[in-house]
Length: 608
Image (cartoon, rainbow, N blue to C red):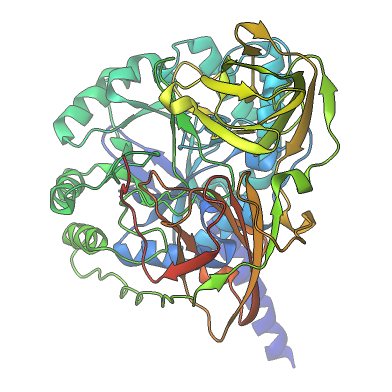
């Protein structure tokens, strides 16, 4: 009996010693290298964004990262995901960032955390929650007090979730990024110092760093913190730049190394020659650089969370739902030829005798038999109670983050003229007495339409879609959605409006009971289909016009015939054996009634 107690005591002591050892792990750096527990450590990292991957698939993607040779994962933290309404926080389900970090540790991966309230990331409003725009006078990325208070409230909530997983607390978070490419936006060092203070107060008592494109490092770095550089691939340039702003010292970290690029509506899918980038990766690793590739795996920007570029008032470029990015791991999480070339480059630079795990086999993909829709409802049959006002109200004024708003006014007809919408954001379908008469598209700088108002009382409906708030550039504060100014007919302002909010945030609440397809106005269609087995699939939207699709309540994203995205990826994790439900919101091709699927994606431009 005594020997058992001795064994038990020794086991407890051993466990305590292991726990202490874990808690005392340290990450630092000297003049040339990052140091993990005092020894040189090279981060070979790849970016994955947890909201862009179904939670059930996180572990698979992390295993794929390990198989390519990554030892670290980078991720942003998304404010509008975690505080969708002021003071309402959500760290559950697919938003459970702490679970993602813990899972990375279980798979033997370190984490680079990027919790700046601004993320860019081709994400709606650059990650800012829409409701910030309802606080009069608030100015993002500034020392304006209301912004700093909202920022503080949020970052403290993030700290509660993630500070326990810092390496100096026994976790696997090595580095935490302060702000995000701030030098591309401003140069206020006092603002950056406040960022640092807020991070420390929130519990991030660890190594902090800044990251900026090469041309903006001078404006975006904060003296005393490590300056990382984005977009460079030549080791000597990287060393020269970092030393310039880090007292002549390293280490050298390319915080965003781009193996490809993202897509926006109406352009060709972006691809690059993988061999060239594999050589770049080889050169960087051979020179001892630490690298975070953006993206290793892009995934999908679900729902209405895509952003838009708008560097000036001359153009507007909303991004597609697919965040395939021509990344080493494709949208579905399968290895690409680029993955294998990068894996070879990484293996070449590992210590002798260190072998990488085997690459998991590709996930099975299926093509679902053609689906026909029997249940249909036109947009007018699903309208909620309206809000009335003399002038049109923006999405923000209606406290509506995303989706659509139908604007209605009744006017006297018997006249023809120009219907003009000043500052339409972003896409409007104009209907007269229940019939579509035209479309206005902000991308094409369209704001006016010649219409004929028949005699008598005329109902003018304008269904406006928020195509995504600006996520990069100087126009972050010009992000209101809907009809943001006025509507006029032949120069005379139209007043007396009803606004119907259509956020489509819970498709299961929508009543879709009709059986006759409407042909003049947008429609919502629902169908049930059965599966004997599941697998990844891609809905073929080439015969459809423009809209969104839901599978079993999951919002897959947007589609649009102008491309380049022509399919919508459906993760196997969201399908089930037996009965499944699909809902389509179609804005233009309302007669289309058959939905097909493929076992591979189509990313191209089919129409000008």
